[in-house]
Image (cartoon, rainbow, N blue to C red; front, side):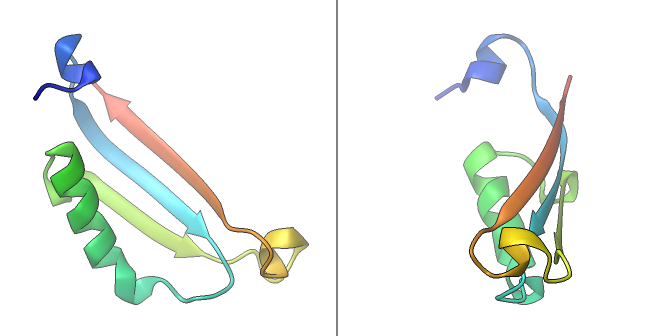
Length: 76
């Protein structure tokens, strides 16, 4: 089944994502996240970068009441 990007003649070139959360520590999950995204979007794991960070206990993310994420996807 084609996705919307493929239907328009586009493909994902790479994904760069940062997840900002105090707890839990995400380092041990990153490989599995990349694998799942790779399978879901049918792209190479080499095209996916996922990083985890904290907000140094500042704001609602730092207090553990929220999670923030930023993702940039290049299509071509």
